[in-house]
Picture 1 (tube, rainbow, N blue to C red):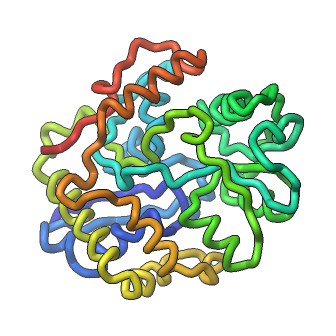
Picture 2: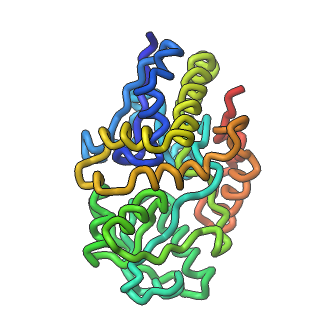
Amino acid sequence: MKDLKLALDWTPNANHTGFFVAKEKGFYSEKNIYLWIIDPESDNYKTTPAKKVELGLADFALCPTESLISYQTKAISFPLVGISCIFKKDLSAISVLKSSGIKSPKDLDHKTYASYQARYEDGIVKAMVMNDGGEGALKISYPDKLGIWDRLVDGDADATWIFVNWEAIQAQTEGIELENFKLDDYNIPYSYSPVIAADGNKINQNKSIIKDFLEATKKGFYYSKQNPQEAAEILSRHVPDNDKNIDLEKAIKLSSEALGDEYDWGQIDISKVEVFLDWLKDQGLERSNLIANDLVVNID
């Protein structure tokens, strides 16, 4: 049995259902894999998932495409490479409370945005505001990462970045009305989030086991799509206590709609990554000579 470690990008949620289901149903063990799933709550997000791969603490990390760019362009670069996407369409949004009276991104001028302090995040959100006719004059705050959602709900921040298949479902469960602004609607060609990332130096020598890992993972996600009630029961054993009120079956069904066709699940469209990378360069948010093929390897 080959031990592999996956570092989650967040506490267990609908984006991760396929991993937990594949583990529970024995899809990894069928491939002679034992998967350790690392929850960021274990160290209160002190070490990011991508950093865990760099340090050798994990074989795979879930992260946005931005992390691939960031790690390959930092002062001491690390070849963090995306090997698979989970969803074929973006399930994230910039969210505000409907009660705030904020009707569109331009209304966020001089309002507080609770940031995860990712390298390109603040610039992306400011661009959204400006594309809607605003100044991009945000007040940026950097709360504890695992408490950002609470800052929005409690009124300590006016906006933050969410997943519509998780926090938005949680809001519905709690009777909280949100206004969600999708990046694509404001001419921002956002890429994939999350992607499964690995150390690019280790991919060729481990291609067979990586392929087995991805095949088992794919099986887990499509099993979840066909069996959302059972998948919800499995996921419920892993989500934090304060998330157990979320309608997990609804979250899984919404997530499943974004998986795309089963025959090419996980395949990353290089052109989509290239368009996003070029957009970052056009905005002055990235100045490297990286191209999309540096960032992504589709495992055949």
